[in-house]
Amino acid sequence: MLMRVRSLIAIVSVLVLGACGGGGSSSSETTSSSTEGEGTTGGQATSSELEGFDSEGFEEGEPTVDHGRGSARELLGINPPPQPWDQMSHADQEMYMVAYVLPIHAEIFAEHDREEFAQFDCASCHGDDGPQRNYEMPSRSLPPLPPEGSERWQRAAQRDPEDWAFMTDVVLPTIRTQLGEPEMTCFGCHPQSTR
Ligand code: HEC
Ligand code: HEC
Picture 1: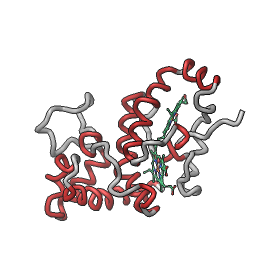
Picture 2: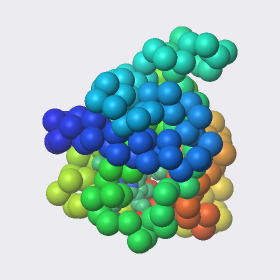
Picture 3: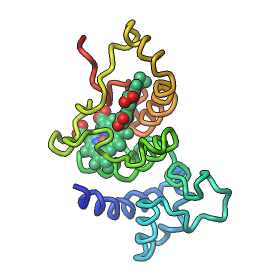
C-alpha cells in the first residue's frame, strides 16, 4: 500500500499540479515555477516537495510555518476539487486524496498535536482496512460520536473541548472545502454511536 501511494504521489504531482498551473487557481502561483512547461525536471521537483514538504524553491517569501519547511497550505491551497466530487471517478478521487487531502490534513493535525499525529496517513482517517473497504466512509476506526446535539454530544464536547474545537473549527471546514461539500458533517468521517 505504501509503495502504491508513493508512486501515486509522483504521478499525481505531475498531473494534478500541472493541470493546476494552467487553470489559474490560487494555488497555481506557488506551484507554477516548478510545473512550467511540463518539463521532465519539473515533475521531479514537485514530487519531492509534496512528499517531504521541502521548502526548496520558495524560500523567497516569508517563512510560513515555524519549523522552517514549506507549508502544504501555502503550496497547495485549500480549494474545492477540480470537478464535483461525486462526479469524479474512484481513481481520480484517490489521486485527489493523495495530492491534496492527505498533505493538508497531515499538516493541520500535526499543528494540533505534533506528537500524536507525527505519522498521519490515509489510515488515520480510513483505518487500516481502508483499501479493503474501498475507502468507504464513515471510517470504522475513528471513534463513534453520539447523535449531533444530543445530551451525550454536549457532554463529550465539554469533556474534550480542545479536540472538539479543532474538529469543529479546523478539520470539518477544511474537508468541506476540499471536497466541495458544504453540508458534510462529522459523520462524513466518524461513525455514529448507537447507544
Ligand atoms: C482527513 C481525512 C482523510 C484522509 C487523510 C484521507 N481521506 Fe480519503 N476520504 C476522506 C473522506 C471524508 C472521504 C469521503 C468523501 C465523500 O463523502 O464521498 C474520502 C474518500 C476517499 C475515496 C473515495 C471513496 C468512495 O467513496 O468511493 C478514496 C478512494 C480515498 N478517500 C482514498 C484515500 C487515500 C488513498 C488516502 C491517503 C493518500 C486518503 N483517502 C486519505 C477523508 C480522508
Ligand atoms: C475529515 C474527517 C473528519 C471529520 C469530518 C471529523 N473528524 Fe474527528 N477525527 C478525525 C481523525 C482523523 C481523528 C484522529 C483519530 C486518531 O486519534 O487517530 C479524529 C479525532 C476526533 C476526536 C478525538 C478522539 C480521541 O481519540 O480523543 C474527537 C472528539 C472528534 N474527532 C470529534 C469530531 C467532531 C465533533 C467532528 C465534527 C465537528 C469531527 N470529529 C469531524 C477525522 C475527522
